[in-house]
Amino acid sequence: MTRTLIALIKRDLNLAWRQGGGALLGTVFFAVAVVLFPLGVGPEPNTLARIAAGVLWVAALLAAVVSLDRLFEADHDDGSLDGLALLPLPFSLVVAAKCLAHWLASLLPVVIISPFLGLMMRLEGDALVALVLALLLGTPGLSFIGAIGAALAVGLRRAGALLSLLVLPLYIPALIFGVAAVEAARMGLDPAPHLMLLFGVTLFAVVIGTAAATAALKFDLE
Amino acid sequence: MHRFANPARFQRLASIILPWSDVLTAGLLVSGLYFALFASPADYQQGETVRIMYIHVPAAWMAMFSYSVMAAASAASLIWKHPLADVAARAAAPIGAGFTAIALITGMLWGEPMWGTWWVWDARLTSVLILFFLYLGYMALVNAIDNPAAAVRAGAILALVGFVNIPIIKFSVDWWNTLHQPASVIKMGGPSIAPSMLLPLVLMALGFHFYFVSVLLRRMRSELDLARVRALEDAIALNSEEAAA
Image (cartoon, rainbow over all chains, first blue to last red; front, side, top):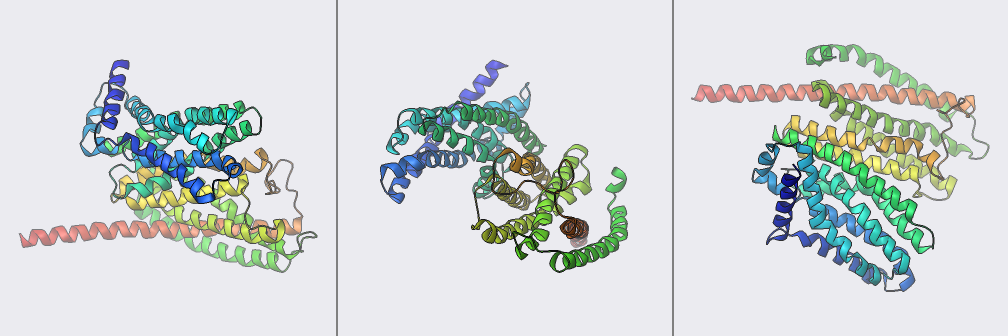
């Protein structure tokens, strides 16, 4: 069972990284969105440090939404989703594996480049560490919550704008705790409580997201 | 429960309930507005602006109540595949969105003279704004899917996921320190509001509930009629094709 799931994750990662997969598009989007802010609000260091956490988190949420349409859409269009549903293991595990692959391909690169963008936004020391930790603990939840929207919107025309309307309101708890962790560290306080709450949101998202996305896709396959 | 799944039985039941709920809505809202606007005292601190409360508070209650109805109907439609629950969930969404919009707008109008600002980003206001977006997302999703059965099932999942927000709204004023005042009517140890103000509030709240029932039943009826019209049109189209062949 584990081997099948690992094979599934590898397959999704290959599809994302090969030509046309567009795994890095979300990451590039993240970088460009962040870079727009110093140009928009001016390069004053204190201002940038003040808004850095919010800007980086919002950009991460948008990067997640932008990359969600690939989560189930391609497999739905070419029929491989029906094949995956016939695997001799619970369909919810297949969905969870696909979400994990989505995080590895689309959002882990965002976490990896976040310290560089954080430095450019004038975050330093503990705040920068808190930012990377918060993104590392929080972004998996974005994939799993996003899976609900992606599963509901699968096969629809104009799914993109609809997806953002469905998913972004559900991302707000992660945004609040993620930004609070960085702000606490910037003020010299302990970010650990916020990080724990954030990881709690992620764990909650893994359970709810997997169950709801599985139910939505099963209806679609009927 | 499936006794009521028969659309004809529902139509009969609705036509018995509707006159009653219409009369109750009109009576309660007229008497409620009379007490709210004329026969209740102005607040010793807030002055006449306190009268906004008689619209704002019931509308906010209805915003959560409508979503709870929608979520319960969605659960019924997923668990028992109850056809009327589908229709009810779909019909409740725009009504709830309307109440949420009224609560937000009257809240802004009330906030300006009382707090000196139209809007603050505190937990209660923000979570109600999210509720409004959840309604909009639900309606957008249900309208985007062509197959009515698939649309309602997708909407039901979204409604149940979004239900997480309802307890957050209810308890936001207790969990966080907010500018918005804590509950003063429905709480342990009885209401802490003057009886002369409680009366119009209760009348208005009951009136809003019966209004909800009236509009919900009407929307469900028209939805069922629409389904029948579609079925008849399909049958006519099929007949004329056969005749042509």
